[in-house]
Image 1 (cartoon, rainbow, N blue to C red):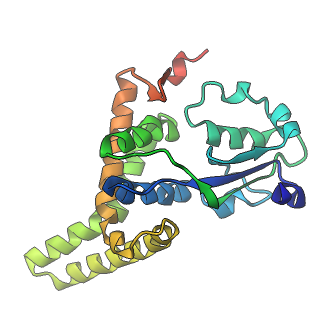
Image 2 (image 1 turned 120 degrees about the vertical axis):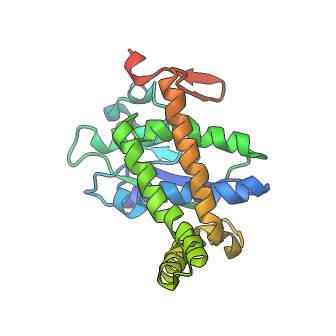
Length: 239
């Protein structure tokens, strides 16, 4: 409340710290927030004149006037990713310069929802991954290619260099892998996890590639996105 008032903000959101108790939670959950922050850089979101918009549903404070101008809840009634859709609606609502939003990581907002195995984590990601890409095959292909080049190519280069005896390829792959792991360490620290998990990021990225592909497959099978007992229609089927 103090941040909203002092900053003249219409929407303040904090990303709750998700539970990381099981093996799969420690492997997948920090990367979920890590990749989210790459899609929606917090600094871009928090710029008063920025165009990037996102929020985290775990903790949202929304000014009533902004909600009315944005047309809430009608504007997000069929949205699978309702928190991001809410931030976009507030950002572009009619008014001088649009709505001002802020998003950051929470220190005292914790999620207690358990994800004890890989299956529930898989559903958490796949339910919205293709929707996040606007159901666009070109964006899907670009995302998969980007993940492969940035996160999968370095360990492949290390293995290929070691097998072929190519020192240059091995060194370049190892350096890229080290840089990648280094960028992941701050998120692991935020989740109070060991930095030793950082080198496993390529494996986690591979899981996210498969989850994203599965999300697209489910979409084209006409199953839509399912979450908390509700199945969302495909966009073209929504009135």
